[in-house]
Image (tube, rainbow, N blue to C red; front, side, top):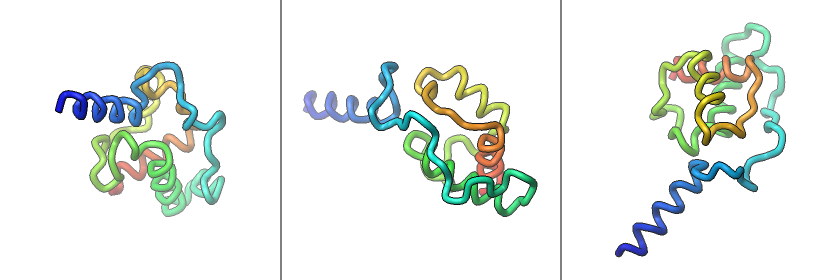
Length: 109
């Protein structure tokens, strides 16, 4: 039983970026959304869609699906602060517009 608990804990920490040495799963460059530039100019529907896509790709593994996210209501400033200060998030690279799109999705769902 102890072995199962230890293995489960190890899997959880690995999946959520528990090691500070980086991960082979993390791309060297940010993934390009299906529609790059969508929402980066004021179209609210496109911004929301981009935020939903980015959240699913970059955030949901640790923070849950968007509808049940532990980060609902977060502002873009709070997201930027977390990316800068939380060691497990240090490998995440998002533009200001991408962070704003994610914040929009977190506040709309």
